Image (cartoon, rainbow, N blue to C red):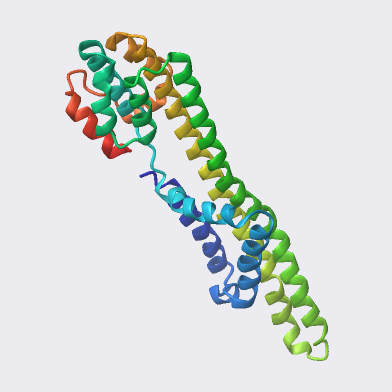
Length: 273
C-alpha cells in the first residue's frame, strides 16, 4: 500500500485548519451545512450530468484504489517471468498451462494460456496490446471523471456564494447581521476551491498515475512473455527486463534473490497481485 494520497490530504487539510487557528477563527465558521451541500452535491450532480451513469459508477468503484495505491512490485514480476522462462526451456510451452491456472494475475494467466495453446508470436503481441489499450481506456474513465469534478467545483462554489449574497442583499435593513452573512456567503467559494484542489484533482491525478504504473508493468510483462515464447534464456531475459526498468524502481523494491525458488516467487507474485 502506498499512503501518498492519505498523507497528502491530511497535510493539506491540516495546513488549512492550522491557518484557521493561527488567524483566531473558529472551525465552525467554515463547516456550514448549506454551502457544503451545494458544493459537494452540486459538483457530483453536474459530474453525473456530464457523462453517463456507468461513468459515475466506474469512477466511484475505482475510488478506493486511489487510497490503497496497490501496484505489484516490478522486481517480483521480473522474478516471476524469469521463473517461467526456466519452466518453458526445461519442460516446453505446454507446461505453462498449469502456471496459467496457478497465477492470480488475470493478464498473465490469459497470456500463459494462449502460449500453451500455441498462439503465434505476432498474434500474442496483438492480443496483449489490445488488452492493455482496453485497460487504459477503462482507467481513463475514472481519472477523467474526477478531473472533471475538479473543474466544476470552483464554479459551483461561486454559484453558492451568489445565492448567499442575494440573501444578504435582502437583509440590508439588518446591519448588525451583515458581517456574519457576508462571511458565510464566501464559505461556498472556499469549499469549491478546497474540494477541487484538495480532493477531486489530486484523486484524478493519483488514479492516472496508478494507471500509468500498471500499464508499464503490463507492457514489461508483454516483452517478457514474448521473449519466453521465443526461447530466451532466463539469465538474458532477466538482464533485458531489468534494463527496461528505471533504476530507482529497482532500488526501491530491492533485487530478488537469484536462488529464490519458483514456488516462492509465485507466492510473492500472488500477494502483490
